[in-house]
Length: 136
Image 1 (cartoon, rainbow, N blue to C red):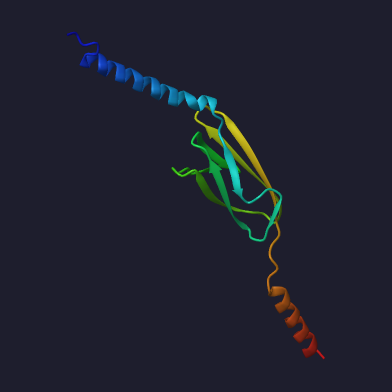
Image 2 (tube, rainbow, N blue to C red; image 1 turned 90 degrees about the vertical axis):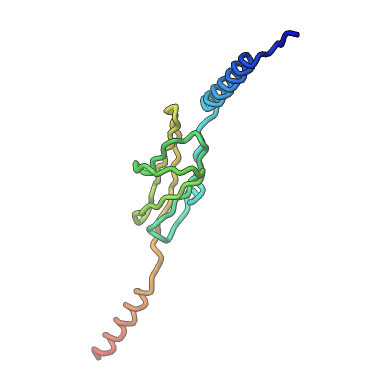
């Protein structure tokens, strides 16, 4: 009796199917879009601290992220955290993501940094009051 699949034909068929599957997986990136989502802070928010922790979520296509022109180190995780120092007043944070095919996605976060009022004003008022009383 003659065998339809010899071990050699079976091995070639399996290798061919694996190669086709791998090629399809690699090409699937062409049809999916890169995704970059800003989790924290929300757009048009007000913060009270100059040091801001920016949290981003990306899909597996993103291979490079720039936050205000500074490259962020990527890990295997899909959530990324980086810290920024804000200027007092209105700030715009620009986030650029790029995938391995050169496609770019841009996100912008607008926020206002308003420093928290500290107790120094109260201390200064007490000191000024004591100086005024002492000057009588």
